[in-house]
Image (tube, rainbow, N blue to C red; front, side, top):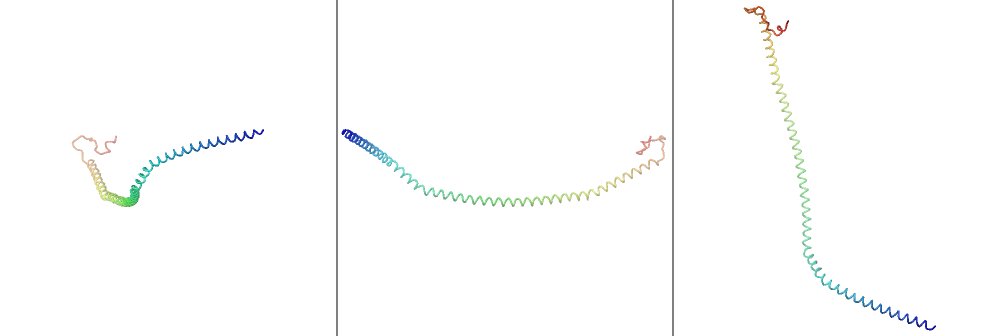
Length: 176
């Protein structure tokens, strides 16, 4: 049985040689992949470097302009806010003044209308009172004259006309 250990040593040596060959193949394949990746990286680096330098130069050139634009925009917003506040104050003050003037105008017009109404009432009392009294006096005189006419007609002697003339009084024709 001394041959069995020798066989195991040979199998182990073959396995060791096979592992060494596999590790060598992995090493060479990894080295080849590494070289290819390095070549691609170098190529990419060659292409990206000019783009990055252009972007940096554009940023360096435009940075003062952008800072100026932002500063100007900030000032514009500040000025617009202060102007809006001023306009608000002016409009509020104008509205308050207009409200006060409207109240004054309302009071003046109300006073004028009350004065006109009082004058109209006074005029009516002053003028219509005597007119009413004069009308009453005229009606009284008319009534008195009608009464006098009625007495004269009853007292007049009967003339050459018919003996029974119809009476002219207001109630005489209604009597049956």
